[in-house]
Length: 175
Image (cartoon, rainbow, N blue to C red; front, side, top):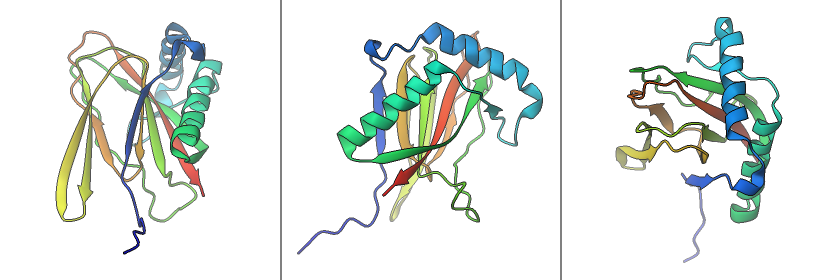
């Protein structure tokens, strides 16, 4: 019999290498500045709009190229935003499917963790008849994770005293 892949749910994880020239301190400073200046522009999921920053551009460039070279997945940038977690705060569960707008619906989501933390990213998904499966990803500074956009995700309660920030990128898969 011949196998034909109809769909695939995947999770990709990696750390940004030092050679990427991404300045972690500058990324965090920029994120906190953007969060403070865009506090009035939050959407229903408490996502902060994000302007251009060279370091964030390098992060997206790295992810896009790594996905293409290692997995033959050609990604096109749609949008990006920031998430902020205060002490003792958890973030709302979300997924990025827009059922009535294919243009606004990403195929993949990337999250870049700016901080080290005892916190974790929780992914919830179904695998055919196996329902309500989950995958836990520890939050570690300089880690990038990419996964299908139909996966529900949220962050556990922030037990750290500092504010945690996360950079989220939405991608379309160019086939």
